[in-house]
Image 1 (cartoon, helix red, strand yellow):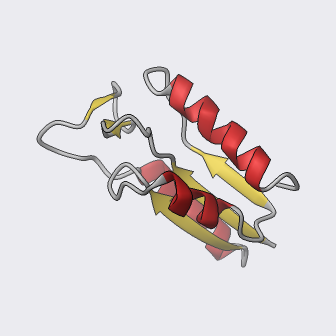
Image 2 (spheres, helix red, strand yellow; image 1 turned 90 degrees about the horizontal axis):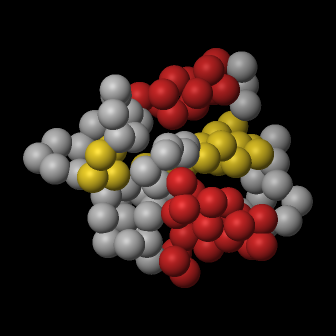
Length: 102
């Protein structure tokens, strides 16, 4: 069983910080998604293979994103927030279309 953990892309040209007290567009500092790292570490500790992608820190094209999510994953964890909800919802729709069994 392989799991994907991701901080999804926004596809609007902006990068958003989702960690911390308030979510915001990327300014002078990009805070790493610590909670996603914790999830990855816990899965690894329990011998569950996983991949972690932070697409806010490393933006990716829609085609490249589709290639990544279409791999054989059993579960996909997606970080969501209120300011990015519309993009996050689109990402979930793309995931289900590209990888319907997840």
